[in-house]
Image (cartoon, helix red, strand yellow):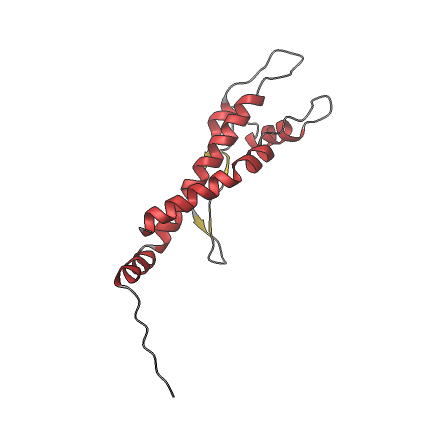
Length: 142
């Protein structure tokens, strides 16, 4: 039987070892890079729809926009790292930011929908993936 020895280049082995040293920290930094892109687009879209196209003068307090943020990276039960972009609760008036955002996104009787979340998701998907790829390459030294 023939035998062959294959040796990996030292540079490649070094890069590979860097990937496994701080796997969780790297995953967090990569996810946060993508989340920054998406949050910026959601914030921009939200600012563009608040108070626009209303019959009456806007009663916006700025609470919804200021409550928008990104959660910390969490590990789910399947071992996947997740980050969420959403609204902090509660509002000063006791109402729910999630409810207000839902009404803006989908509308209600007498109030037309002003989608800002779904368009932000669609528009920022490719840019977020690219930001995460760049961050991964930077972290891995590729």
